[in-house]
Every structure is written in structure tokens, then in C-alpha cells.
Amino acid sequence: LIVHLARKSDIKKYVLNISKAQKKLINKFMPGPISIIFDKNNKICSSVCAGGSTVAIRIPENIVARKFIKFTNCPICAPSANTSKRPSPTQAQHVYDDLYGKIPLIIDGGSTDIGIESTVVRVDNNIVYILRPGKISKEMIAKKCNLVAVDKIDTTKKYYISTDNDSLTERTRELLDKMAVLYVILDNIEEGKEYFDLVEVMTIDGEEWLRYKPVPIDV
Image (cartoon, rainbow, N blue to C red; front, side, top):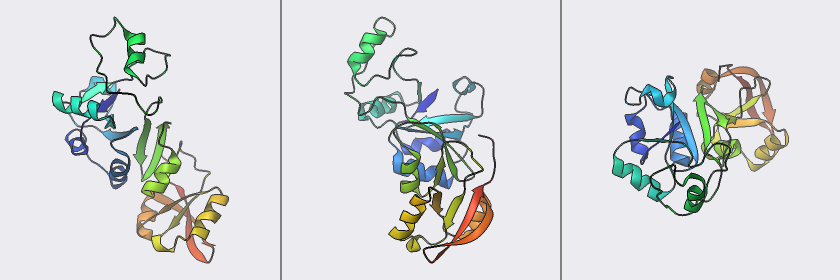
């Protein structure tokens, strides 16, 4: 189950640490339709996480939902407001039609923009793995956060790393997109060495790039 919070500042109360990559995701996409997996601390009970050591956290975009969570003064652990195999509701009437007589009340926060689940992501070795697709795509994550985002671990793919953000010309972007490769901007080469295995040095549009593949991990 996903744990819902009212504010970004609340996240640190319930997790062991927040990485730089996770901070980028928080700043760019929260509040919004993204759930980020963290290592939980002892303030999150084990039954919420099926006995595991991690927890998925989301901050809803809907202001009524955030006000309700803030009013309760505690995290809200909740699934979508629908029964199994039923589509996710976008209006309070949909919840009423599906769950009438099964729940004590419905809070009408207005219609939602989309009727699909939040994107669930996990960050490992500075790579964002999309564990459940949703409104926020890997392309959006790569563009807004300058992070490598993949559907799942694939060590056959190569990741092209530039160490100079200013040198990434529009021509270079076009070439990279045409080559259908994933790329990310890092502050320096030492940061790249920490998260990737070097494959080769190459030149794209007169600019030196370093080709890497991700360090294999279990996801």
C-alpha cells in the first residue's frame, strides 16, 4: 500500500534517508501522480509494507486530499477508491456507484485530471526504475530531472553521459534521440564512475561523451 503525506517536509519523518536523485524527483513531481520508494524507519509499521523494509510515499496533487491528511496529523495508507478489477474513479459519483454500503463516507474533492494510478519508482545507483507505469513517464523524468530512467534493469542498453551541461546542444540532443539511447547530465566524471561501468569514450557532434552501462542490481 502507498503512504500518503500532505507536505514534502513530512517525508524525512518516515524514511531513513533521501538521496540526491530522490530529492530531484520530489522537487519536480510532488505533489503529483508519483510514488517514490524509500527505506522506511520505525515510524511506519511493518504491516503497511508487508513486512518489508521499504515504503512507497506519495503526496497527492488534490488540495482537499492534502488538507484531510494534514487534519489527521498522520500518514494515510490507502489504495485507490475502487474494488478489484474496477477502473480507478475520477469522480465521487464513481466511488458511490462502486462502494455504496461498503464504506462509511465519501469526501468529494472534485474530479481528477486522469483515471490511472500514480507512477511508482525506485531509485538505485542514481537510476530511476519505473515499477508501475502511470502519468509520469521515463521521458518526463529524464527531461525534468536529468536522470536515467528505465522501465526495468537492462544491461544491454548503453547510457551516454555528458560532463558539461552547457555543451549539450540541440544538435546533440537530436542525434542522441535519433540513436535511441538514454543520456544524462552529471556534474563530473567521478560521479559517473560511481554509478556506471565505463564502456568507451566517443565523440558526438564534435563533443566528447563517455559511454556507460549501469551497474547490475536487483530490482
